[in-house]
Image (tube, rainbow, N blue to C red; front, side, top):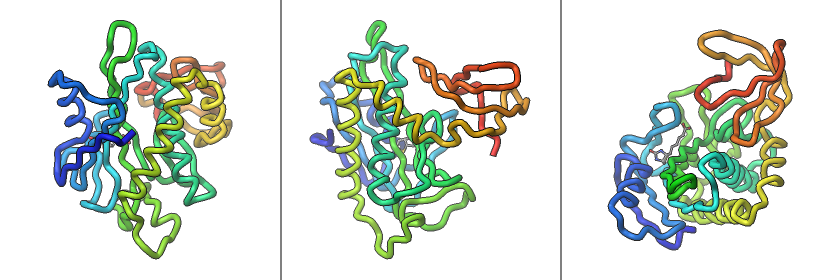
Length: 245
Ligand code: BTN
């Protein structure tokens, strides 16, 4: 991963650049990384925008070819990638780090990173997968009260070197990617649950504007979130349920 690296001083969205490369029909090597210091139209999940201060954070996309995964198994990649980011950060922060379903990186109740995975299909399998990662590294001030960065949490006096951070992060991603490629998803899934934000705690959730309480009990084989409610266990797709803070 990262053997082919395309650096852009400025671009709209690294995920879009990756998608354009794939669509252009050129042979895109697995592990190709597109990275920029200044992403002007970063996209998040649920149609949100992803903002980052120029040159302070990591905003990049990696192209994988997980053709060994059926379309229904794409959540395995979410687990591998979010744990890869989690493992990387664990080298710098020892506590309070978690993965918020489906793949946000949290430190206590604040978001440090987000992941946007966009796949193309090849029959019933995944063809290409564009894994977009936005990780707040050196930024110290945030417009949003529930956002944070590695430097802010670790109180590191110096700025982290982004190139060095990228290469370490890519190593962690590759390690976990190879795990799912070798069919070892189960152990990753166990670790994902063990480090999941608010796992097995009572919490408020919202669905179709309605609030309810429940306890997260796990994920099903497609990655849906299982919540035990008064009315029994319900499974939710990504767009169907929200955490109420
Ligand atoms: C989210 O938290 O909703 C996901 C955020 C993903 C942001 C990254 S930054 C690099 C890549 N390019 C994009 O346009 N988005 C992802």
